[in-house]
Length: 522
Image (tube, rainbow, N blue to C red; front, side):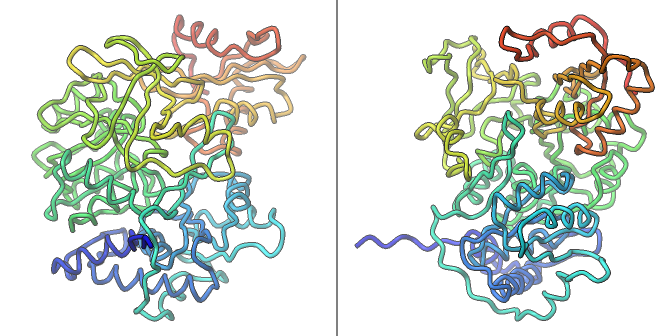
């Protein structure tokens, strides 16, 4: 009888460091202090015991709505150690989005940072009783405290005997309809991202200090600031602050990381600000970009200013991390580089046939970090996961030197600051305003070539289409949407282009937008 191999991702990431004599080496630094690998091991075991005391069984889900502090790796790895399945979610979502994710995942508990508690409480109130346990990270008077639960839990905890192909954690990814999809990853995927990308491409070692402006609840940030440093015994710097240029520059100066991971919007904002340190003030040896295409000029300006190239790459929630990337010493700005060893990529036409070099087609990827499936979304599984291949939803071509060039999304989805934005979701929020009849949202480049949401709006009859309405709509959108999803520009029109069946033709709006300067932001 075949016996499956026992493998637990949390145990691997922790025990490899203890076994290598790194118990007293700093694993994480957050806004409140530093923590050794021994400290982390104790916290993870304590959280595993908290999970068991709450009556949460293996395979049951725990929603993590956490800022980047030591409580994120504690809860994420502690849940995995106990055999539970952590579900990491964006802390900036609305109560309605949290309610959907809680209901969809059937999470038994929520670990939430105090600033996100009001939205989580509102979301829990919308669920049938009894709802999930709500446990708070950080000060919140009268709430169940994560720190108190950890303090009372034993430090010794057994490891759940999970298997390499067993569900390990989820990340939610938005679909073209705006409904998030629970993307299920298996136990072996985390370490594969380090073995295939971080170690051979970044050349990460235990002497590195890593800082990722992309947060841990994103697939990109999870690899950068948790999996990669723990895989080799490096140190990760965590910051709960919003990654504004001043905040990021402060971290770069104070902690002097050797590896920095950002997104094009941030690199551009830092170059435009007054806070960016000089290259000689820093110890950077690697800079990474993903989440959206890096405009070539931003890469060149950063390289000239800091003295370190940006390695632009592409990954996805479904593939967990980067599978196409530029390499040190081989950077070609304006491309996403070449495939990472261990992954296979292909570009195909609408019939699924490979295209010739130089021809644009749909990008597919195959590799060991592919998600197992989408939870509760059988039809989307069938169209995304095709045998060993995963449909990325991106348009690409391969140039004559083997570099891959991004051409845009295969559908109308936008990617803003490294995060997906569904036009349908933004349009629904705008139409919810009493003065608005119709709305359509597209992606438009700002002055630096970075894509931002642009809204075409049809007011109801009798409503003045003026700057006052634009400001009102802007405030309305901010009350319903995460900041990165809010339109940067509003243009009022009498009607929207539609097909004979009434569907909005967004490509016509994109064509019209390309012929005119961007409207002023309200």
